[in-house]
Image (cartoon, rainbow, N blue to C red):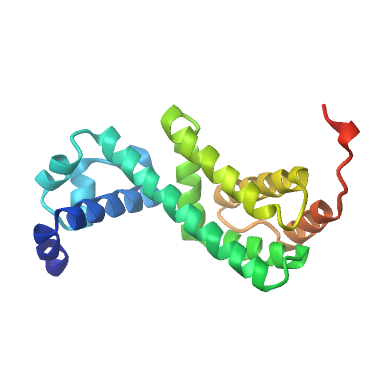
Length: 192
């Protein structure tokens, strides 16, 4: 940890990055209510004054940390959809990747913290909307627009249920839902 602190002293942008990553870790593990400059400094292994030097308010630090979480979510989508593509873009490939995501407790904690906080913060809501949009767009090569939205809703609902139950949802139920969405032919006359 001393090496991390020394390196950050010579690299202001590196120190700022370490602080943001630490804040993101605190939020993912403990929620936004536990986010304090002191807690982040402890997690980052930097002096308390460093966190306030780079982030004058806890709200500013929270937004930077949640933006980092959004970036990580986008990276995870990229990885997931590369795997789906490599497996042929089938319903089974999609369900397999979704089940793998739901089995990653740490990632579920990060994503749930991000979305839960965004629900009550208009600025962060835009980041969440962007994340939802990425999921929909990345699903379009496999299904139509309505199905892509349904797949995203399935993913978000399964994420929340996994978080609330403390265990992944039933993989067979995920398989069934994904296959049903893939098999559905949209009827333009059904719009409400």
